[in-house]
Image 1 (tube, helix red, strand yellow):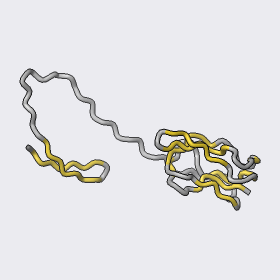
Image 2 (cartoon, one colour):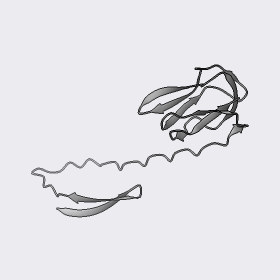
Image 3 (cartoon, helix red, strand yellow):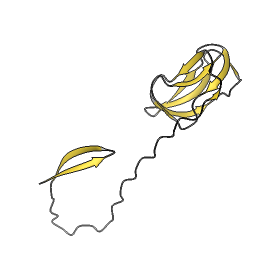
Image 4 (tube, one colour):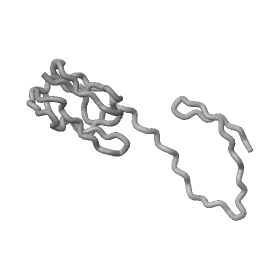
Length: 121
């Protein structure tokens, strides 16, 4: 048994590896190296001027779509964005009637709980 230290994404793990002996000839099939996960997209520049009502992310996830644009009128409950979290698509509703004042995210952005996605007037 061998004790090894392995670092993955900056976190070091102590692992034990046991050597296994094959009773027959090992297969010669190559093993593909794991691919690194793509880096999260940076938050885009805010478009528009901040409004008085914030539309925030209810949970961490990835923005699949932004369904409105700055200056567009929205009604309470209208889906203004779609957020993927835990492999489920969640529509983010407008909290009240209003006009989109600013959009703070774009498709593909990773957001945390409470991140301001857009503002309304």
